[in-house]
Length: 431
Image 1 (cartoon, rainbow, N blue to C red):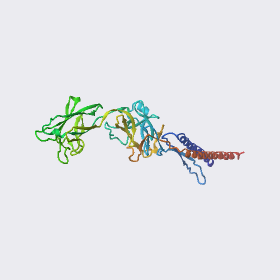
Image 2: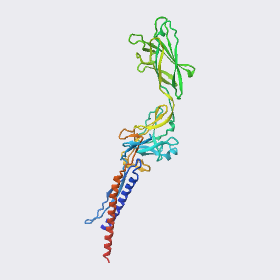
Image 3: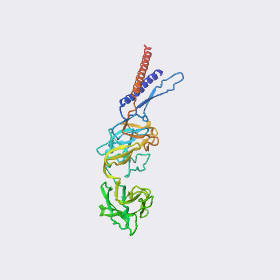
Image 4: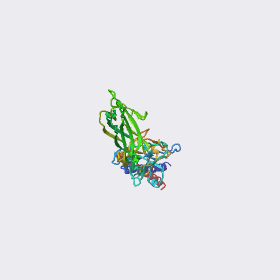
């Protein structure tokens, strides 16, 4: 019994060391594989309780583990959508085959890094045919509320849906001086007219007509002007009309004092609002008592400058992912628009994840349930663009373990050889 148990223990030693060599071989073979998590084989003793005065060798067995919680160093790249998690957590991806087959919510897999580029259909796809998953943003760039304990809200990130974008004007600024002499009795009352450009909701440049008409009193000075804004594109329809009142005191002379009708002017921002294209555009004319914006001084009309935000419709030129996981589309009109959020997924036991091909993983009973974090919050790390995570394999350490494993394997083979010789000696007793 003792000899046979010794033989079994030797065979178990060969098997376990072969298993350990397999993990070492896998690690060395993937030492240059981005995102590879090294495997490790641990040995566990097996005890067989025998009768008193005898001993039976129980042997050993190997247990392998993928060390997913280990992190490889990050290296920089030239592709903005080369992504890696800088710390704990993983990126959600889906099988490219499932996406190509039209799955709206394909089963999510996890990976710590990937080189994603737009494919022919606009999906951000890696060389391993993994499609990046994210939460689609609202039209205004905000991210809607989503379930944090499931991947039901995740969708394949597609940049073709955002190739063009409008950037309508929401704010205009005028810097000009109105002649105080035009509000005196006996003045001609001629208006001052000019146009300003703005961008409508469809990304087209259009004009608004601005007219300043002085109020000419019978006697003295009125220090009052009528501001009228009309829309030439709509038959000259009047969009808004205001009465501007200017001060004439020794310290505030020439500054804007008030705007009628009451409540149409915000002294804090110095703006009145124009109803254009179904929205309100802030027309900044200057704060009450301030020297910026519109003034009334001297005898000369001077248009210093007009400014407005917005731009013509833009074409998508690039997509980048920031540290918070926001996928930002960059357009040639200088606009930046958030189109998706990439959450960072974490599980209680990363080493319990089920390993798949191409450095991907799937949640299992051993890993615990997933939770979708905003990148850089909770226990998770931020997302690094222009970066890839290298393999966690330390080749020098693996070679050292390979030497140890080889010697252990040879020693177990010697045990088997010794047992065989002892059994042979026992057989020779009969001769």
